[in-house]
Image 1 (cartoon, rainbow over the protein chains, first blue to last red):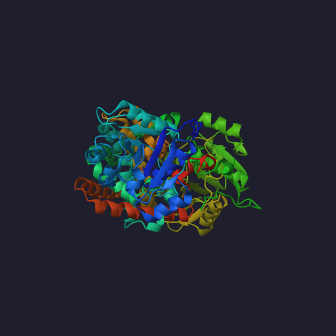
Image 2 (image 1 turned 30 degrees about the vertical axis):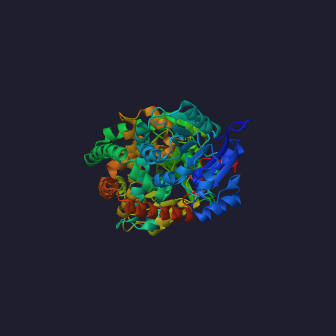
Image 3 (image 1 turned 120 degrees about the vertical axis):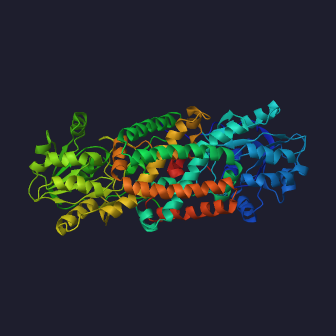
Length: 320
Length: 320
């Protein structure tokens, strides 16, 4: 099975009048691209507090307009999407709150959801509606040039409305992500944070860890690690090249779930270490056999390529 | 920088008269393909103890001939390459020893080298020469259909001759791997085992471990792990889908170096866990920043693709 990465047909009529994207990194700039391509908004306003990013967004023509300040950016928006590292949400919410349009929907793209709700919600006026979301998609690159319109296609987006959120607003956010090409699932923020701790946060943590361990060994030089990385190590360097600010904030804001899952990972690793120490070949074989099935399932549901080695080698170079 | 995966020009004259490949899995069958394609041997004999593999190798026409038994396979070979899981080497060496041609070079492709030397060497007659090697290349697929001729192109092959090995024999093995497209480095078996422990064995171990941990959580269902795997987890499932027999044998045969490197990994992970517990944002940011540089170096030396997400998405689907 291939990963089609196709977007559906353009919308006949825009879902929103005006959308405002705050923060134009990988995710924000990909959203801007797909919003324009799919005709999701009549008007798209972009704003980034970093002047260099602002200029680049203007050069790339990612929005209908680049706002010169936050107040102006959000003033007429029917949907405001915060696309900043999760640690920056509270301050941003506070700064934009006085300028929001009555009835606006506020959303975000953060990889942690419980803490995001508690960081944003207290700052918002009562006449706007918060519907947090998390698109489970990305690459190891950052910034407005790294984005692309199909980033969310065939990927999942998890929407985590606080209790008693207006259903119409939830539906609009669900439809927004569907228009971006995503499959959408609704979850509580707490459950989201547990699911992502194991599917994303722990994988990043151990990838960062092994890359750093390898860089600091005495027995093996860094040049050897780099040369002989094709034996497995290089796979881990991809996610260990992800944005440091984003990931610092993830770990600071999903501490409980991460520590809980890390406890399980460590427990299991200790058991595996004992199998190696005591030469338990049957135990190792049984474990190494059952882990194969999960990859097959991930490929079957279209979340991974079946191409050997992630398709790193293009088919035309395969000679046999 | 792209990974060219190109083979050089065909050899004008074969390097060896007859080569025998024992074991036609991913590595053995890739070797058979490149040997024929590049004209590395006048004659290529294939043998596998698994009857189904034997038949498939004959169907695929991988060798000049498929031998019907081990004695016949090795009888006239100038180079015999053992391409079996490292745990099978001792028995295979013992079984083939009486049938080897005087002056033959014996090599292998095992991922562990100290134990391979001690498993094979004692069984060999004095008139043959052992020159172990390890091509640092592979995919997560197994068997004779998974192989391809460019598997070793631009990858490193580590040759680990025991002390006082005949230099002509070492040179022939080095030239053999160069003809297969590899870069070659010579190392002691002991140092090889430390380098591979960190660049390959520990990455596989923690990948197997996290995939198994994720499969057995109570808080998160297996279906959720599969659906939301694009946040990082799916990267680990690739190497956790590698051949269980091969990897059981690696861990049983490189116990000391693996336990030593695992100790370092655990020590570093504990420090990282404490940073999360105590909210040390500066420490996390510093660590997550320094790990980026290593990936850039791996890309710069041609051991990894610079394409986002390993190039999982083909360029034609990138719209922006």
